[in-house]
Image (cartoon, rainbow, N blue to C red; front, top):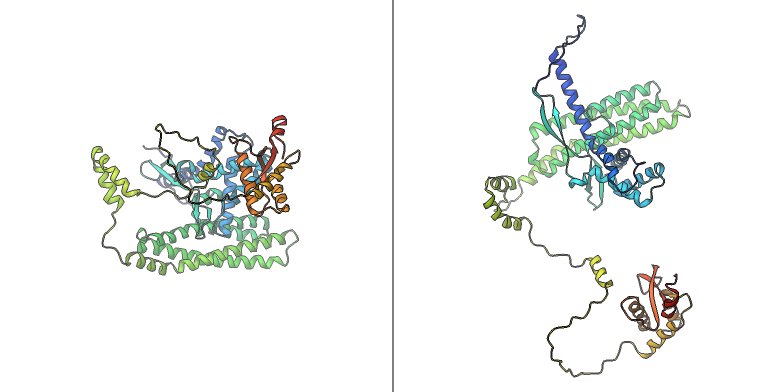
Length: 500
């Protein structure tokens, strides 16, 4: 594919010469960068376009604004710590929805917030990278390429908590400067900030400083990702070709940033004494932002200086550690590549054995609480009647077993249940009355078991009473769970269910 380039306009001799090839290279690079920039914002627009497919009324909801607010909260928490918890993001989106769509209920706001976060995580495609095809114009001929990127990730911290972290692309989407290198953007914003402070444009300087703060977080994430890669697998990093030059450039860049930020802090501090009442709070905020960036760059500078030792330590740990005699196979070279060369028949015969190696047998969990609760609350099963008659075995009792509940316990329970008020009584109050009547712990157990038996709709009434859920917690020191309302069966048949 070829495209003609118009001749450049005529210029005077004093102007620098511009050839058609130079102009062509410039627009090709710019168009390719901006196409990649537009592609990375696709997930935000996709969430907005698909909102009419939901059962909720989302006419007043803008998923693009919600997505940018998610990135705002996450990047803010990345500057203060290690990331934002999902509850913090949902709470921020809830307040945002309440101001724009007050008719949305809390449960629906929770659903909308989860949809927004899941869209940024690409939950629909199991959190894989977003993918988009585009045309690369920077080559001699236009080439179709695939762009892969993430906007948001959910990572686990060492203490077991899960937090959301914005990727470099996500931070770029939020700041709106995807086509600029992060180091160049930092230098440019510091230059603009210096000029704004010098001219007394404090309000604009605060906004610029906030953007510079985002750039410092982005640079920390970019450089930290490379350093973490060394700790995971030192074989993926070429020290002499890539890391050495990267760290040298990072040290020089951080030295310049620290010196520039020190000068900016001094310049702003000199203006605080003579500042007006309107500018004084903004100058204080400006100093706080610059000092925060300084602290972040100091910590990053220390990590860069120690990166050489980290690389050597990781190389020693990963390459020179004692290894087993049996080498594990390379899944890509020793398993996948030979498998792709097989015909479908032999490959199908080996799938069963291969899956048994990849997915070994595992025992199920010993206790699954939801299933246990369902089985405990299920009605009793019907007794199975065998087709064949079994000979009944006569057993001789070795001793007379005494019942657990004696006649005194039964009398205490009968007295309590016989004196029910017209509107019924709660299980909590009945237990209190039983204790006041000096009932034993066995009598308490008999009372609870009797009422639980009447709670079963398939069971026959016991003692002329029945129990219904009270929709509140049982207030008792010896028993836990939901409270019950105890009613007389003759009142239930004439008046229906009584209110608790």
